[in-house]
Image 1 (cartoon, helix red, strand yellow):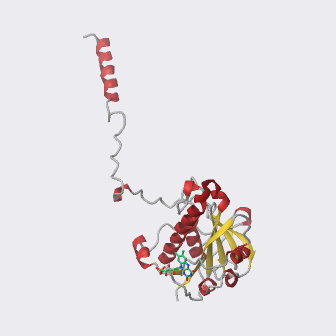
Image 2 (image 1 turned 90 degrees about the vertical axis):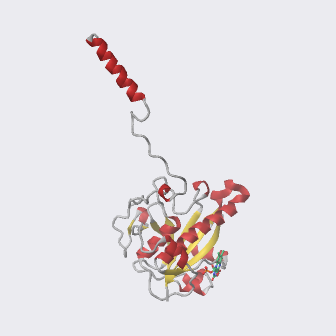
Image 3 (image 1 turned 180 degrees about the vertical axis):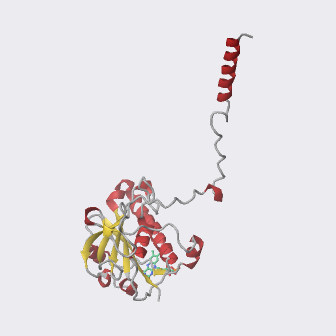
Length: 258
Ligand SMILES: Cc1cc2nc3c(=O)[nH]c(=O)nc-3n(C[C@H](O)[C@H](O)[C@H](O)COP(=O)(O)O)c2cc1C
């Protein structure tokens, strides 16, 4: 056989070989069955999608537009999800001890924190619309002045609405008055207008997701909380300075256990 014929034959077989399945690139790993433990993606390595530079566990930093930047939320705790589910109870009495700023940061992150670069959050939302707003009525928090704040998920920040301790005015319920903080979940109905008559149902479902996240996070931090819905919506709106087509869904006091 002539040398040039031999060379062409070698090239031909190399090309055939590359086109065979499994030769050009490694075979993809077989995907595990849906729902099996192996199909659960590992938790992301601690790579928050916001920067919490300079905020410490007990001191906020200055964030965007004068907001207060909260310390970074932790992705590991000492209590398993199963333990938190088993231990969760409505707690309505609290000690007078203050909450730490990192506790507050963790609770707000659990409610509506952003968890990936597309802006998706800890709680699910119909068509990723995110109609919920989380207000913080802070009364007794180390490193944070008493006041009403709005949680800003982008940047993991607090926007101050007003100074002062409004725990006694937010609700007549003793639990809401005695927690170190009240977390108030409200919903922007305009954002759900496109869902028509389903809008109000969807928004209530979303509040449930966020509230359960707060319950489990509080339990994991050994804090007490309760979901309360017995309040005057008008009174809460006045305290929070809320206007527009919004609805108040839950007040959740949080405090250290007695
Ligand atoms: C929609 C809803 C509204 C609630 N409203 C109040 C309330 O206004 N005041 C209160 O003390 N507890 C309130 N709760 C808490 C329930 O009383 C409590 O979940 C129930 O007694 C079961 O106890 P557990 O949460 O410890 O399991 C509410 C719970 C839900 C789900």
